[in-house]
Image 1: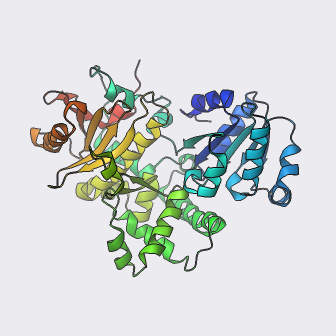
Image 2 (image 1 turned 90 degrees about the vertical axis):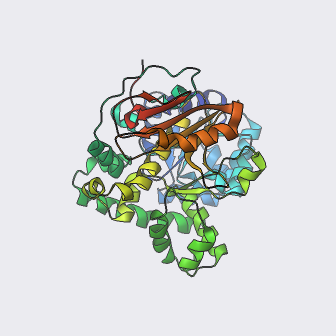
Image 3 (image 1 turned 180 degrees about the horizontal axis):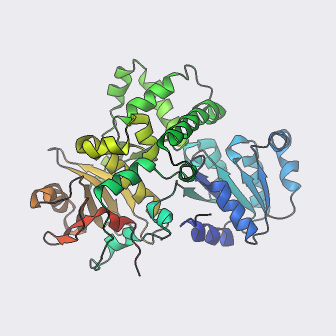
Length: 413
């Protein structure tokens, strides 16, 4: 089993929270992590609602079902039994014993209002994403905390060729993929994965008329990753009502197919009205949807740019979940069109800007948008970095650095 970097956070949550909900994409490794913790001595019974008998019993009499377990219980794919949530709420209110309920689900509970409301204040919610690059390498990344350190520590990142980076991106992070070496076998798995999500998980959450539109929508959105989401334009292109499109987008985000990155503004109120960027949650899935291969993207750096940004953004999303700093992630675009790919903001309002470049060299001009961000953020601007496919750490002025991409997953002592 590959060690997951969120494991210690998960174990800590079980020590003081009556219920811990482990969200994440289907096949990201939630069940494997929970079963490993139980096998390591955590005294919980394990139940999966992929078992038809268990599913039927829980739906027919939720209270009796839960009270049949004397000690802690792990309920896998619990979103399939929404009837349980009010009973879990009642049981937690009756006894707030730590670690009593371990819940896992392939739907983002925060985007399911009724379920989120019933567990408010009673559950700690964690997200398990597909494997990060550090988890694949056997390290626990600390790049987020590295960026927010008071001084930029010296680093000697491993040299990773552009070809190897492209291979990492097109491979993705679903654990199952590492058992399927030929690209054709991976494509078969991705095709089955998408069908399972659209035909089962989406149907479990909502009755969708015209479900055949979802694959087409997903393919179109894949061509627009790392761009601002223009709902009106997408709806017009698909001749789809905006209300229907927004519902579909929510379902795709709820099932961890899509992820959005909100806009940053020094005015917090304006962040809620600016357009987000759209991402596919796994870069391997993204390249499958686009029909590209590692060999193709080696020859097409322009086409690879948005995919690389998508990949690096999701790596940061994963690392935030176990970092000490726990910043929020944004993108930035000024009224005059200056754009910074990614903006991290911590609770002290310190700002770190990140630009992503596919090239192996960096020039002063690559920092112009970071300098605009620096002026707007003023005293809150902490650092600006350009991630590129070269091999050297290069300072470019006060708190501006060019960093090799491999620094994201390198081991630090």
